[in-house]
Amino acid sequence: MQAPGMFPEYVDIAWFQLSQTLITSIISLMFFIIFVIVFYLKKNKNEDSLLVVLTEMFIEKMNDFFNSISDKIPITAKIYVLFLFFYILWNNLFWLFIDLFATSIPFFHHYLRPVTTDIIFNAMLATIGVVYALIYGFQNHWLRFLEKYIPLKGIGIAWKKPNWWKIFIWIIIKAIDILLWLFIGLLEFIWEFTKIISLTLRLFWNIFAWMVLLILVVSATMKIIGVPFLWPLLVIVMEVFVWFLQAFVFALLVMIYFKLAEESH
Image 1 (cartoon, rainbow, N blue to C red):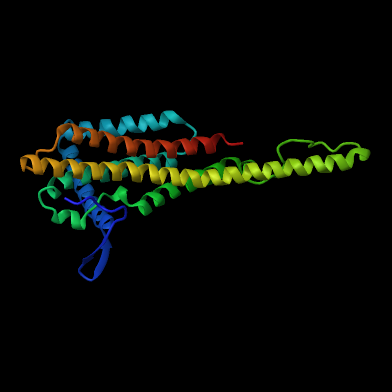
Image 2 (tube, rainbow, N blue to C red; image 1 turned 120 degrees about the vertical axis):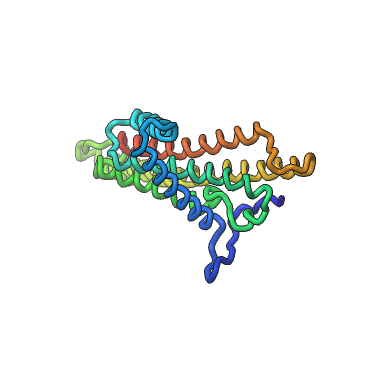
């Protein structure tokens, strides 16, 4: 098997050209809808079934964890963070399931690719999360939040106007004060872009690297023993853990950005 490129390819589907990650996300969404339907059918039939109990327990534990970070963040923001976590995790685990077939049927690799290895998709999720946190910070603090970026008061040097005979020195000091805050505000503004870049690349590189590693390990296994489904168990377990961890870290960082926006002043 050939290691994939950094960017998804476009393939012809009927009259359209779709990216590999878009096709994967559509199929993943269809399976998610099926899972939700099966879950509610089983819940209505038997609330104590293993699927229902494990699913509800997992959702409840993750919800309790994110709620423990802050009880002041609005429920809509917490729902969005939970959505990020479960959406990324579902797509990662769905790809692992698809990869079971793709190892023996390389045809799948031509049309499908993990959604989170699309850097544009990751950037979209990161941008929405960071911008949402900024909007929340502005709603929570109004003009005080803008003081991070705009020198409304400077950084506090020579704020009180001195006697008239010291006015020239005061103007110089106050100008330095504003320039310093402009520089700090610029750094804060750059930091917001850095958040987006960090979230995007963290998720992309970790998922992409593990996808390539898995392909290399499976290829080596096929050459040695000729059986594609006999993957090294340790690699599979580690991949599930890493993909869970990346979904968790992505959602956790977005939640922390909300927490920082809440405490900003």
